[in-house]
Amino acid sequence: MRVTATTEPAASTAADTVVIGLIEGEGVPHDVGDGALGALLACGEAKASRNHLAVTRVADKRYVLVGLGARERLDDEVLRVAAATALGRLRELGSRVACWELPHKLPASAHSARAIVEGTLLAAYRFDRFKSQREEDDENGNAAAGLEALILSDHEDRSAAVARAVVVAEAVNAARDLQNTPANHMTPTALGDRAAELAATHASLSFEVHGRDGLRELGMGAFAAVAQGSDEEPALIVLRHTPPGGVEVAGPTLGYVGKAVTFDSGGISIKPSASMADMKFDMSGGAAVLEAMGAIAALELPVRVIAVIGATENLLNGGAMKPGDVITTANGLTVQVDNTDAEGRLVLADCLHHAITLGAQRLVDAATLTGAIVVALGKVHSGLFADDEAWAAEIAAAAEDAGEMVWRMPLHERYAELVKGQTADLTNSPPARTGGAVTAAEFLHRFTGDVPWAHLDIAGTAWDGGRPYAAKGGTGVLVRTFVALAERAGGAGAAAGGPAAG
Ligand code: BES
Ligand code: ZN
Ligand code: ZN
Image 1 (tube, rainbow, N blue to C red):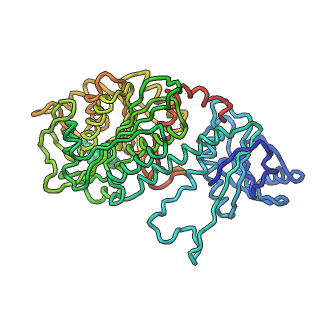
Image 2 (image 1 turned 180 degrees about the vertical axis):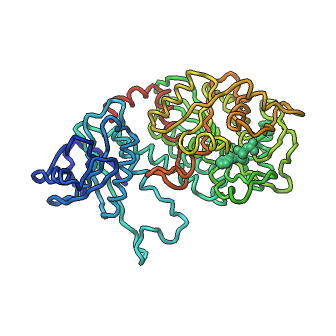
Image 3 (image 1 turned 120 degrees about the vertical axis):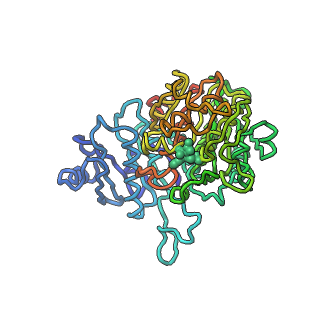
């Protein structure tokens, strides 16, 4: 879909359909055809209540009126959902070119252009790679035309905000593709290939991958132990974003670390079959990191970022790690493997340590780490754990700016005690199944040294988002937050948050 911005009135663009958001008590901003739209509102066919839709035709254009609710509660998420709702109707109408008229006088903190682009592009996403006939196609197999172009009309020029939003929304959809692709296709090697492809596209990205032998050479006994149960070659993927010479780089070097277990069977501590099929999504943290790096490079952000992605399957062949095994991690700590299904923390332990070795000055990891976080926070918030207040605030601000929801969870010595091992330094599975998301975070904490670190547990938020723009399957969660975080670190946060960004 082509997406552009214009300062022309929506009614004078080449669009076949104009979309207008209605705010309660505010009438129709730019009416057409002698008050045709206002009349529709007056007779009750159009309503300003959230996501109510009305359609009419005036002269050569169709008008879709979508309710935005009350102005006081009109934030980016309301617009994202309204754009997704409007897209549903645009598809039914067979619209090819639509023009969204941006609502007026929103607060400076709002990113209305961004939200509408995201809502539209994320809602337009389909994963039909493996279908011989797409659902939208007609019975003769003719491809549905779909929306070809989206125009955003505003009094101010929103082209910079639109261009940025397209890059980010496409990165989210690319992460969703990685998540949705089944594990027999989305292997660690395939993830590495995607990283290589991004590096080949962007000069600022450099790429490196280590397989099974590389893990051994780097002393990554924990990551290697998970990988040893599978015949599929693991991949320690490193992507670095380095702005070109001449660009002034502000802020610390960021380390983005992602769990990418391309299939989590649980290993010898095997999962019940009912909860196994979705475990192709256990690489969602890695997918978010990977595609965020692509967006950061495309946006040429003036910040150094080192991404470390640990990709492996967690299976159970004859060589698989066994409950009770003791392994040695890259930072020298020993771990007793009490449950082979607690594999994510083993992979991340070595990846976090590696990111520090490579020079990361701030760390954030993303992982579908625990079922416990799903119990605690459901599918609404990602769990945020952090050992540094300023860094936690920075992550929370980036998430807020990006419109993703995170909720601060605790770390405490008394939880940390629970990850101490009997025969080794640590256990990967504390005996009592209490505070499971926190003890998992405490385990990771042992591998982050003095570097300010944050951990995002996305086990609940990575899949079946239930939002109108990401209802089923992979959500691409955290791509938006990771891009916003890099913008802030590079000093672009203030500029991107300003009114000119829309
Ligand atoms: N990938 C799972 C986490 C998970 C579980 C995500 C359910 C979504 C739904 C992770 O590797 C895992 O299995 N964790 C265990 C840890 C336990 C054995 C200490 C868990 O949460 O049950
Ligand atoms: Zn597991
Ligand atoms: Zn897992």
